[in-house]
Length: 300
Length: 285
Image (tube, rainbow over all chains, first blue to last red; front, side, top):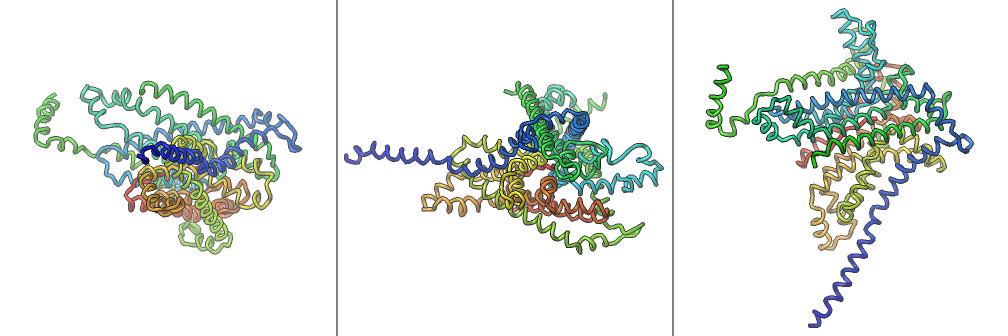
């Protein structure tokens, strides 16, 4: 009897204990959020301040105005073109390779090898990657020599150059395709065999199956993957640094020049250039969000 | 027409004879194999070319001269050691920061999960070149030992490792029943640190190791942030060598590639031994 009458009281103290602990649970994530604010958000906002600040610390529009100069715009345009082309081509070839890897009848080890290799290749960038292509399609690379000696075609006389736009596209695809393969394989796994069989039973040709079934289902994932590839190429500095010795202008290379170059050093202009990159990437994300919602609309 | 007719007649026979099984045995996907062969050529040729180039000593003569020269260079050892130290620091800081956070969010604050996920994938949207410029601007006021030392660089590398480490931990935590494990440990009298380090961490071994290997591979090859912050890391050293001796740079590229490969093989071995599917995703910059 005494037990029973004291039950509500005990429940109340227990509840208070639970509630009290619950209120303190957020303390556990403070270090992470503090770190993210300090080393991710503060740097991003510092760019905005730095871009509008003169060397003396006052407000200025000088550096932001420099962004719309023809030379700078050309660098942005070059970066955007390169990123779009390599995102689309990388997305296409990556999708084809991923589809081949997950195709029925393909032995399981092919997938393990392909994904592991993609993990390596997607992280293979910078000077080592540049070096690999210098040895392959550089002026004395083995493919170039093969064309020159065995086929009698001089690629470089025909107008090709590793250091041109086309050359950069070939090199960038080396990390874009594997990245596509890694992010799109799970989405392809989601395509069920039954759908293809159902479509075939209803008389659909493979082309119709792709046009009306597979592509609409894959579209949100494909869009996401291509946007990821765009950002990946747009921000790539190491590879561009190693291959574009001033011939082809890209924004990351320009930032590097004004940040570390002794002669060209202009740190606040570097802030403005970086801010411009953030703006381009933000617009990409907005466009992506919009397209994503349209693409996924019917799936709900 | 006769062929089609024959096929139609055969079909029921195949179904009755082999049931579902006969249909499941599909032809080998030749077109897929063709794409894979073409892909393999595109991906392997540059690697073989680099290897061949690194072994060249003059016209049509091959040897290990480039490697010998590189190994004897004290700058090589210094830069490799610096990159190694940086990757170890990055792994330690990233794991100390993210393991308790990921565990706590999964256990107690599931509503914060989207926020944490968003912050950890943000480095995919903010490229290293932007991040390093922001770090240099935002921490200008800090003392030299922080600003000029490699603490700021490690801080940036930890941010770069966020997406990889958190994804790996997230997958690991989803695969085990953390609620039951935590309650069981607590009912046996374990304190919070004991629960975390003696119960949860041992169960996350596979994801911790794959996160560590991936972070190691990324930091060992990271160029952008190091060169802007003026550190002579391994990748910066390779760029420096490329300006003067091409075969040396080729040899270093082979070494750098081997380091990445070993890290990825590490992930594969760890993933296989534990039996879980490893989480990994690429990303350069």
